[in-house]
Each structure stands twice: as C-alpha cells, then as structure tokens.
Image 1 (cartoon, rainbow, N blue to C red):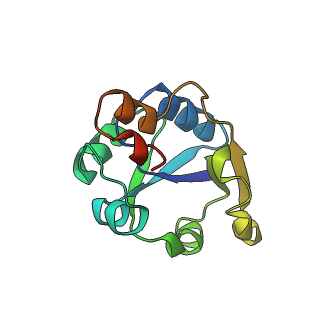
Image 2 (spheres, rainbow, N blue to C red; image 1 turned 180 degrees about the horizontal axis):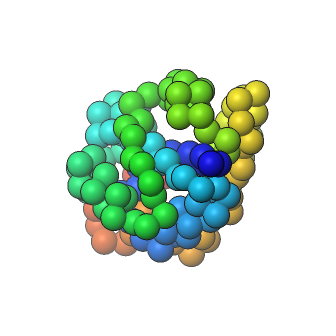
Image 3 (cartoon, rainbow, N blue to C red; image 1 turned 120 degrees about the vertical axis):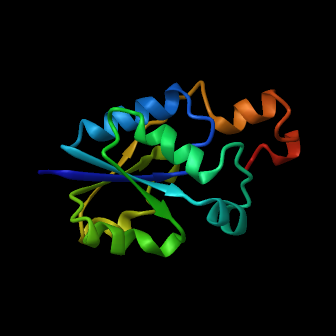
Length: 137
C-alpha cells in the first residue's frame, strides 16, 4: 500500500482543497492529512481559524479522499511523521516549492499546483473576516 501525506490548516474548506486532496490521493492508496491545531495556527502561523480544530477535523474525515487525520502541532514533526506512518509520498501545494525537499531522504516529495482562482485567505478577506492588511496570512 502506498501512503501519501499532506499538511495544512484546511479552514473554510472549498473546492481548491478538494482538488488538492483528490490529486494527493491519486498518488497513492492511503491519504493522511496532518491538520494544523488551533494552537499551532495561532502561536506559530499567526492564523485565526473560523472553524475549530475539531470541526475542521470532522469536515476532513467526511471527505472520501481522506483516510486519516492527524494533528500538526509544530513545524519540525514532518520527518518523524513520514517515518512513523511509513509515508511514500509527501505532498504540498506549489506555493511551498522547495521548502520540504529535505524530506527527499525519506520519501518522494511532490508539489501540486494550487487551484488559482480560490483561496481561504481571499474568502476571509472578501467576507470581512480578515482586514485587507491581514490578507497575506
């Protein structure tokens, strides 16, 4: 069985997220999503989520492409997750191009193109959840 892992916040799940998860799942048999916890999002990423970790986890678990959701609690856990879950392929959006190449010693690393016309940040900005100066977060 080929295992794939991806990481993210997955707040306000939209069709761009679904596209990414579908394409990630097509790279293997079992898709693991490491979901950023509320504490990690706020303390490290300075992101405020609309939905709680538990709500985002339930949403992800309901998506047919996702086989397992685990917490992402820090930046450093990726290499240990890849080893622990015997991951064959690590997948991220291409806005992270090159940032996780250090994982190539453990598994294949793939950067998938994002769906260009949609982003959670844009949705939050459009609906007033983020001020325009926060839109880069």
